Length: 237
Image 1 (tube, rainbow, N blue to C red):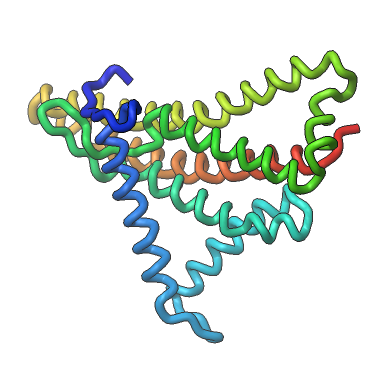
Image 2: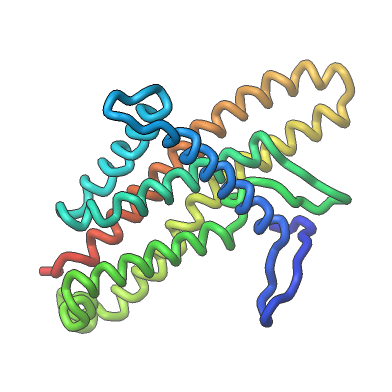
């Protein structure tokens, strides 16, 4: 958002190097966490297995609260993966921020609207797929004509607003948190020793609050995603 970026072109598309590096780091962290916690699975779980099982039960509970029985089982792995990815992505920029010559190469991927809107688009595409699979093409698309046919335009506009709000809500919260941390750090660097005394507790307090917000936003994104999918697998009255 207004900051210098490093990009390259491939097949006519423009790719942000910082986003690619940050997403790869998040992927490696998520993979490492799951791989490490699942190394020694047993009937008598240890601490690592207990943590992993709690996380799986937590995300399964999210989808069970919105989706019918068998469908919630089908989407359990999706919810777990999405939640863990967003959770780690939200926290990355709080603890690891790499700038080279004014260009950011490592930050929270979810502090970029392109990333969050891509996640939003994937969610709403999955909702369409699940709706067609559950109801068939005819019943699924007939829902857009209810309660009467003129509501087709309103229902299509609602899809667009769902796409925007789902992605921009996540982006706005994470971007604002990182921006304020950057401002506080800049105050400390430019203000000298006296400002360090003021800025340090402010930065620690805001960083802790940002961690909390990052966790809440991961939960909200997965919950709303499950709700959007649930609305597509039911016949509107």
